Image (cartoon, rainbow over all chains, first blue to last red; front, side, top):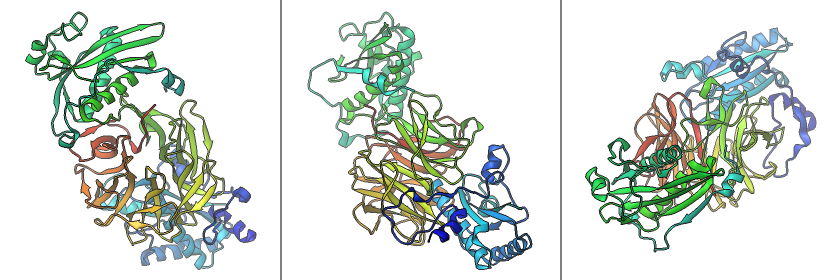
Length: 165
Length: 431
């Protein structure tokens, strides 16, 4: 169990099965290394920069209030898988983002599901889970601010921040 | 900020021992249905302090929806020389400019203490209204609170229920072009005042019941965790454990427990934490999104948002139970619930087209009513009197905080344009 936790630690969480009423801080030390630190969208915001978009790993997009990966998204992720195979030392933090509609907390939860869906797809293609971490910014770091279908669609994304090369 | 020491020194004494006589019955009268024309004269004495008291009191009464505050420029007398007692007031003169009610009094300052005596007079009856007279004493910094306390008392006289204005609203905002920090707003402020300096994203601010701290989630350590800012010192301490990700938390009404939204491996559920941030119970365990818990005032039940039916809906659940009951029955997207401090009503935000509107329903979801319509309106939070709500609205362009009564009859902008003001959390009454 500990070894499994250590693997998932880069994802920032150690999945426990079922209710766990007596959790404590015994796992401190895990989740300390975060791949996105330094070049993630929040780091960019601190420098007054717009959130990251694209890069060596392409963004994937979602329908409203959905974390389903459609055919287009899976096609993009297949290219991302190939890039990560070609660059075996690279790691990625998967950032879940949402459009502006809906409440802040719900959208952070939704972005977490989007990032998890992408991570599950990548590991399902054989990539090692320890190369991937996830974080959700909900609707807090939008690429655009217009209340239009086009802008909403652009903001509903998982952006991948590459590190460790 | 005004700290707890100052609060303790503020004094309020009733000036009359007459039995309370409400002007109207609350059952036939709500905010916005009828507005009393009232003249608020700056109390006689220290002119600057009197002006500030009148300004804060006027805004509160205007916001309440029960009063139409007359423009002081229409007043015909000099407040520094005119009488302030029933036998010396020119009631005919006040009637001539349309005043039905009149607030008058005296204000004195000395040795760091302000002493204020005020009454509300009924112009037609030419006498002071029962239980409207108060002597208030406090420091210079207490003056806005004296006005709020008096506004709350006038609502008690008028409706039988104290007003909510001696209280605070926590919120998140990007005012000043910053990333989102925790701010606090009181009804005498021009703009919200910043509490935190996170250089990060903060979400879901919530008051500790003693009002000395605000719990919030912050991305300061990368993944979001719970922190608490001390309102007096502005010091921030981490509340939740290092290894867990939390999207928000709310203190129980008795201040002994916290309902928190935990995100774990892409899934969010509701947990019960003790006062030190340790998990005592996992309240929901579902593959769907469970977020935004809010306590019932009895501390035995809570309301939250879950997508377990396939779309975000509102559910209630006893702390001791394991299965929630859905209370929102209309709408495809219902979120951010808040339980009235009176226990009888729940408010939430519902999606209509591409905007959100505020819904108020019975605690079992019965008789839902949409009380907003202009712009997009989210994040309802109840006033301590259960009569008003604050919410964030886009109707002015950017997001600002607005006040409404629970029927939506009177809706007023609280914070000025220019800030992305979100997630308001109304405190209990200050004591």
